[in-house]
Length: 194
Image (cartoon, rainbow, N blue to C red; front, side, top):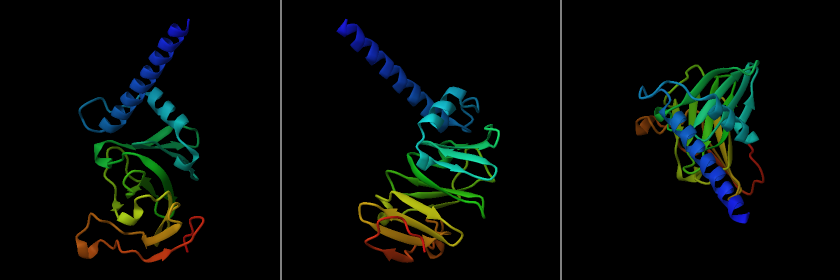
């Protein structure tokens, strides 16, 4: 009886793992032209249910949910209106997000690299970020906030807040990257963006 239970558990875990890998592949290949430009409803629902509250933002027109490698926008009737996913997005392991309603921009923080990628919500599909901020100080950042003028990132382990220009972008020529640290606040217990 115990062997049957163990085999059943292993089969369930392996099918769940396969389903997650299949969903990741669907999101990664979205908009590539290699496959149908669709992501299964099952994948969308499973990702949406598993997304933490840090990866959900309500807006005046609906809801934004980020997953490991995709961003989903739904209207107030809970209907998918836009999706940002695919190879060109360079999305990999989204840790948190920040929405700037004034510019209709969504910024995400990548967990493993500390990169902050800013997307315009005027575009959808397999679209590259408008701006990317990549700094060694951001590796280990746990949360951040994007405003019209600033981008503030908080490293909970270092208890430090780093402030950058909201227009920082390492994809520009060095003279125009605007990626210098504007200020550092040490001994902080939470994200403070002054």
